[in-house]
Length: 397
Image (cartoon, rainbow, N blue to C red; front, side, top):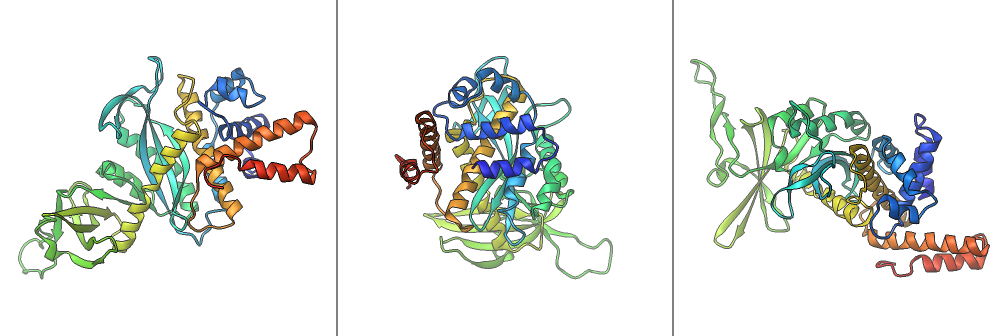
């Protein structure tokens, strides 16, 4: 782990050595701390004091650049990758917390008072794994909607996304808005997402010109349940869904899009789902695959909340909260990269973050014990004991 972080930090010439030292120690602590990852508890697992954590958390750091640097070796030009964007609710106590507001909470199905973060991630389709790139707290600004804030995050990161070979951004149905899609496609990225089954779509007119007046452009409104015969049949999936596709016009987005319709019989009713892409030349099955891969970002949220302290920021300052959420995601990236390095594969594998957290704690504790006893890991017997006990209590050995 130390080699992964150190190599990436050394390549960041614009960061001073004291901050590099702190970030390296912070990421190490987040992978071993037991309980809440607040300032006081993290100080118990490191040589840094609670005050030092509080002071450095208020300073900004380029976590996006660090993540891109660490992932550049894993994500080669030959691998197929996409970007994914989603937001997540965070509970937070304290009336003085900056950014406190009403946000949608998916687990309760309603808006609640708390915090929200927006995460831009990179999804490796070959290994079917998502890595966090950039996270920002949603802070409402005057004369800006939240859609403006989300699109600005993508625009800010788009140059490095393109350098990593990303050309598609996968989002859920909330982002099906003209303001967001136009802003993103203007950067060179294409959007893949989901539609409501009653979305306002128009058929494109394919007939001949009558010779009089303005040429006919559209041929009626799309009805996904009744106009199945007007879609092009693609095939049948192993899970039983029938796949259809068509190029249509979206009134909401004010552009032509490619729609993929999935149909499956559920009892007496026919279930229908609609996906779309702003790239009308993209293969229908690729649209389906990209949108399905988007769900990997949900596992990033889950694992960061459970294992690397995403929800545990002790401060009410927006600068400290920003550092906490980005450091949490970066620590999770480091564990995933170390797992890939150990298995020496870039294909899809099973990874247990709980096991890696336990292993890191075991190694941290043994190093402290051996240091106090004056034992060196260069000794063959000591190293054998270290390797054996590193996996003590892990879920997946």
